[in-house]
Image 1 (cartoon, rainbow, N blue to C red):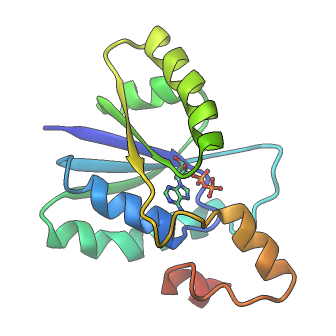
Image 2: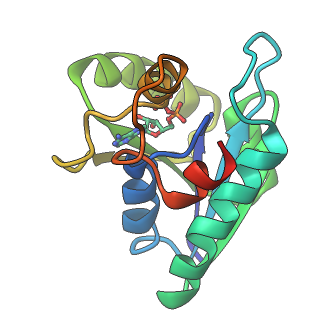
Image 3: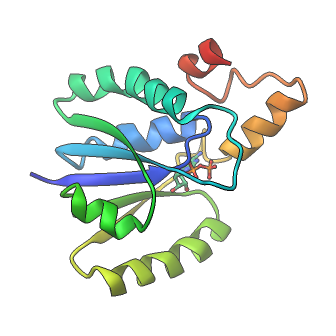
Length: 158
Ligand code: ADP
């Protein structure tokens, strides 16, 4: 059984994340979406809300394609979380060259620490590749319409 771990902050989940999750479900038998807990950041959505939104949005989609989906929160080293949860793949989305710069170094470090875990990059889809949770939070804070960029569960909770 091939298990993938897709980590992020998902504050909130966006159409870009939805795209990566859907496409990941085609390459793994089980996908674990891991929400990293950051003690320093004050999130827009609580951890519980973020977990529930991902679960409600993506659970039925995973079921429809016969894959398993679980949503967890985590603190600490990503490679430890992958190992503890039986994941052999870490999945990341790549939007820009800046994403790549950051991810390339992180991937090499993770491979040095845990050679058995492979990081897999999915190139962002053109129609959602410009979306980031940070921009969504900023647009929302300034009264803008975020509805084209996030799934309905986010609009229902905001
Ligand atoms: P963000 O960077 O939007 O705040 P996260 O930290 O939750 O979001 O990102 C988790 C993962 O999802 C990262 O690998 C990131 O590159 C990827 N990702 C985020 N937004 C998109 C998008 N629009 N298209 C493809 N991948 C994305």
